[in-house]
View 1 (cartoon, rainbow, N blue to C red):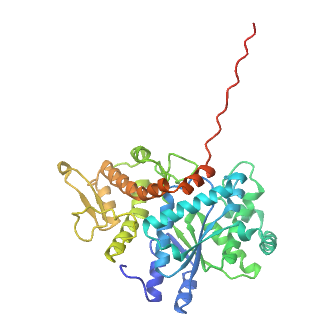
View 2 (view 1 turned 180 degrees about the vertical axis):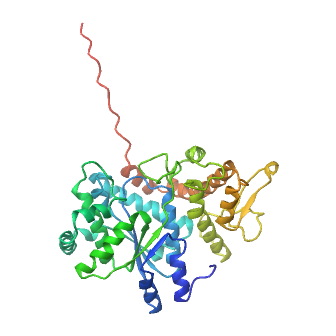
View 3 (view 1 turned 90 degrees about the horizontal axis):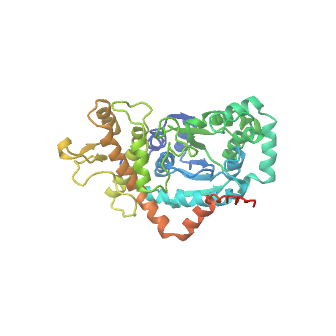
Amino acid sequence: MSHLPETPTEKLELITRNLQEVIGAGLLRAKLEAQEVVRCYWGTAPTGRPHIGYFVPLTKIADFLNAGVEVTILLADIHAILDNLKAPVELVAYRVEYYRYILTCVFRTIGVPLHKLKFVVGSSYQLTAKYTMDNYRLCASVSEHDAKRAGAEVVKQVESPLLSGLLYPGLQALDEEYLGVDFQFGGVDQRKIFVLAEEVLPKLGYRKRAHLMNRMVPGLAGGKMSSSDPNSKIDFLDSAAEVKKKIKAAFCEEGNVEDNGILAFAQAVLFPISRLRLSIQASGVEDGGVKPFVLEDAPEGTVFSISRKQEWGGPLHYQTYEDLERDFADRKLHPGDLKAGVQEAIGNLLMPLHKLFAEDPEFREAERRAYPPPEQVKKAKKVRWS
């Protein structure tokens, strides 16, 4: 879709494309057909350092905005504390500020119009008397079993779970009402929390919302891309050398398209961003964002190019991800060439972000405060007895 959608059907198609699951599409269609503004929120708990897996939801948010959706980004500081203290209480406020910087810069990099976005910090309303009373009402209508099941794929599972982990899913459900949205957007790992929200909000006298879920991108070593596993992900501020090292070590078996983090990232992030950037480029707008991942001499219609030496057949150009995956499955595209192409694209993605970081002392200070270097433990001097 090269033009901005105009009809309710076109808008709904853009809102729901490339998602793994949509619950409540009828609610959104009714709003669109009534020519009412559709509102959504996407939340993130400011815990570990954000990584390039965040490009998946942030790229999808560009679709929402282009469809006229009003988007709220929830910086869920209370949730960061509730999830087994993944973020120490004394650092949460600093991490909120760092996440705000990072996400704003990423949106600028990929060409998302910032004036259509609103950032909200969870504690700004989650500590009010009304919200607290609603939380008590919710706790009185949700069993321990259901709360634990809802958070099973999101809240860190430990042998002796804390009470805070049981509160986490309910607060996320309440956020839909207090942020005044029509749908919540998140990864498919949030599905059980979304189902809980649909069940519990009507019990409190609030309306049911729709829920949209994107696919989870596998980590570089297979499995889930996680902030707590440095080998599974690339941080936004990783150097070019670190990116190269992690891509080189990533699981990418020749011909194997299953659980392949390199292919999955190309599908969920690189192709959509390149397509978005090509659209912006065609409109003649110069916004300083990343360039499309296309070589200068690429055929018309190319969305993603991979440089390759002439002795190995020369560059490869793809109009769709499906074509790239087919070449990889048929062993026409070698893992080394795929990795090189993805590494170059990630480098282009991160370059503007690194430039913004280098030029903004407040951004650098936010990073230092959010993730202070560990204190050096001084070794006690051995006492010699004479």
